[in-house]
Image 1 (cartoon, rainbow, N blue to C red):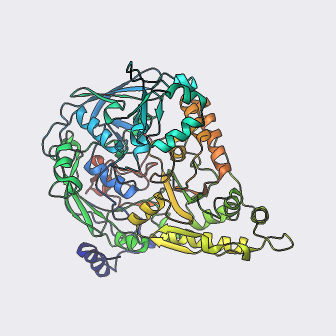
Image 2 (cartoon, rainbow, N blue to C red):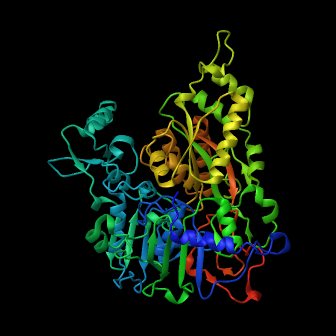
Length: 613
């Protein structure tokens, strides 16, 4: 991958700094000389897919969005729970189905325009537009009619009275409008299979759902009401996600796809974009129009898109960067680094897994999917990765107190071979025959990153040893990989990881509540029964009973095996002791307005900073 001038400058500086103090002779890894002033140099991972907060889905983008944009709420720097941002307060009704946000009158766009409730209405409608095709649109499906609009659905209306048919007339559910598929052939098939639908749709009109129909309303310039289809007690936590961060309508409409160029972009966060050189660096500077500019101490953040772990650590050691992102310390380096006082090790709301394309043979056979899952020794993989725990579920272990996490299938080579034999991969005597398996129909695809390659090679070796099958490996550049995986343009397995967008198990389980392709459900598996279980859970007001139903849904999904769970990870990253206000929180998402450079060594962090609020 080509690097630009800034990255080359960093590497040259690294070579010149080869005499840095060895880690074994210091409390920290390498140099600890703060940069002059308030400038943070940060390695954020892969090149960002986009600077449009409603388009990008990766964590590298999320961290940059947190500098440029602000939403109704922001992530707490220690806990990642929601804190007031553009909304200074909010009201919630009894069953958590309606939220009224009160916006700060002092909130401004970076060009000085006032930020109003109308900006949020526009942005939500834009992100849900079928034409926009946001992969994160599903996050807003709890908003009234948001899913129907995003999927191009229709209402059913009586042409004589103008009355809309209610869902309760078909299923006995709450009195919301009935929504049917917009595609005529799909709709005709659904109606033909359901006598109740046939009855209520006879002689009726099918009316496309409009953006104006979704449950987002500006009561006035500073009051935003959001109505949900049902109770969702975690919804406020979702509003800190990038999808819900507003965009500046006049700029988007004037410049189209070029609105994020440095010379055009207008933002709402504590920083504004100064420079973006793809595959080189992205520089932001403090936004003087930000409503809380007095809190912001950093004058500049330089984001570097680097993926090679050894390069990151060497640059960090040489003092050329001040912090790096999560999961970046190579396992072979951990014996030296793990005991140092600038190593960040804390529980993370994150998992690693492989998505399985269940729409293509041979992975459309449940027995085959289960066999490949059972043939991986995840305990050995966790030992190999060092700062990880083996995972058989889809939610991370130990993050959600009181959640009765189910367990999927464990390591069982004999049963894996039996399942493959049952699936037809056997010899004339009925015994399992690895030579009968079509290896040309599978592959393991991963995005280019050293850690991902290491895990892929480990799993490849496990399948070779335990099943006698060599699955080819293929790596892709991150942005291409996201699109290919989302659209199921792979055969077999695709590397995936998920970091929760809010502190609730549903942030993981909802990935399979929407069908593929074009979403973050990178498996092709979709089951209405699973969706119904999730909906039932979120209609349950008792928190512990809700957790029980969510766990039942997770167990149901694991039995269908659309994915192979691998690991629950720790944060695993580094920051210089003089970088203050930056914490190893569960999401490794940093509210940059609270970060600063401390030049007084007496006030540095000598160890992991306390996460207790």
